[in-house]
Length: 253
Image 1 (cartoon, rainbow, N blue to C red):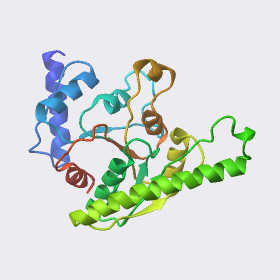
Image 2 (tube, rainbow, N blue to C red):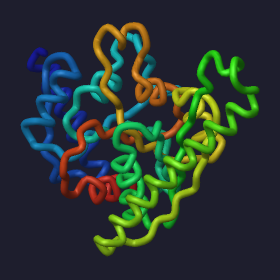
Image 3 (cartoon, rainbow, N blue to C red):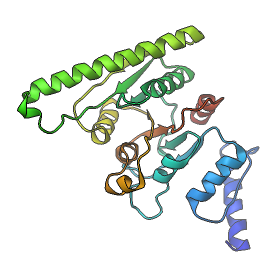
């Protein structure tokens, strides 16, 4: 980056900060690949939350030149908020996307914490489930869907009960959960549910996948990100944190 480009970039950044009430913000102008530089800044400042913008109704497409959201979801140690730039109002609806495997309690907890900070008394949980191949050998389609939905409902209610009990013990406000369990692959069904229900933000965990598998099939979280028409909160690491939800509240107010 030439000195002139560096100065122009800083001037534009200062102008943006000044017009958005961020006069006291620490500004960084970096040269190099966006993903690498952003991750370095996150580490340097000890960031609790990384906020990046998304563009277009379908987000940043996988494989598109210049796309940075996918690598950041996979590699950033801090939670990532992929913000819909067209949205200017306070978030009023939260959807938690979970396959109910691994640690669904963490995704539910983040969704409830976010709702409480935003003054909401309800979130939605959307654990989509696909019907496996070969179901017709033992069940009809309707029976297969009904049985899988029953299992998903039991798992979801168990996770909700655990998280509600933990929050009650901490003295946190009650946040109810509306179940939106539907048949289908998560990467297509979750964005459809979010659009249909008018959700403002999807909370999810970008599960890790090997490099070879990622080339063949992008992780579900990235595919949800690509298809969603709202903001996406992705938190990779189950680490303790302070102030993340409060920071988001200040961001969207």
